[in-house]
Image 1 (cartoon, rainbow, N blue to C red):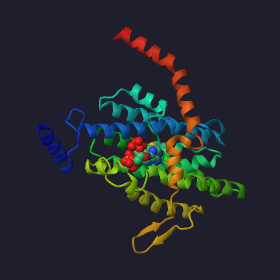
Image 2: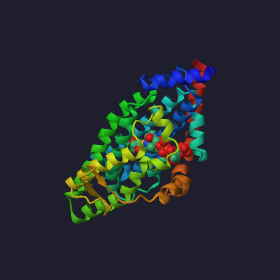
Image 3: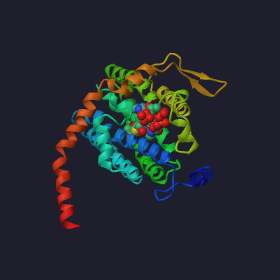
Length: 307
Ligand code: 3HC
């Protein structure tokens, strides 16, 4: 009986837009859902450094190298920020990271695709960070205080990431025929995996119901995906890129772009661990963890001596 009273009071707080803070009572399920979602978001930020890190030493100019370095460092900070937010729910960061390394926890499917050309740095900034902005501006208004506040800070940096990616592509599209072809080929590879970042369609999303009821998600997977498509079509046209979907067509009735079918078999294959780079990404994270153990041990030894 008492739990029902507590759950009703909690839902009333959510419905009236009150932000939930770490010390507030919350249903175990709310806590569990946030730990799952926030930790996987943090994992995505950290694993997301790998595809771009692949091009830091091969950037075409010192300026491009500086910008890419800054972006990758930002992603590391986003990961640490969101891990800290997840820890307010009573979990240890080392346990979350262990779940990533064991393959138990997920991270965004998009980071399991290879970065084959410099133009991919543009596609990641424009499409991947663009999709992240659409998702994260929603999460900046979510019901859990530490998560929404983390998103406000992170969205500011995502906007820089998005603009620098779009500028890379715009520059290539004003370049030689080979540079234009490189930009178009990159978009052809990244467009559909970027749409999959928003998750399965609403009818196949087991978590969305609860997350929407608890105002963690304020829009559904499909609504956010549609918003991302609508803004991307016009931006692509503006720099002469063609999005690789022959079914893309403005619908005068709905005011949105209709688009072709998403390959959900590919999506579930990638999130099951069978994407082009899943094994490589997890190995890189496990290697980094073991190679960095001495730093953690030294920091803990110092802390135990000086606290
Ligand atoms: N990649 C990997 N797993 C995915 C996924 C994707 N693109 N989309 C969905 N999934 C998983 C979910 O985690 C869930 O599995 P689980 O229950 O074992 O965790 C399952 O597929 C079913 O999906 P649901 O729609 O039911 O799951 P959610 O309601 O959690 O929605 C989500 C999925 C939209 C990714 C949501 O979790 C979310 O908004 N997460 C926070 C944002 C985030 O993680 N973004 C990732 C990119 S971060 C990034 O790009 C940073 C940028 O700076 C580079």
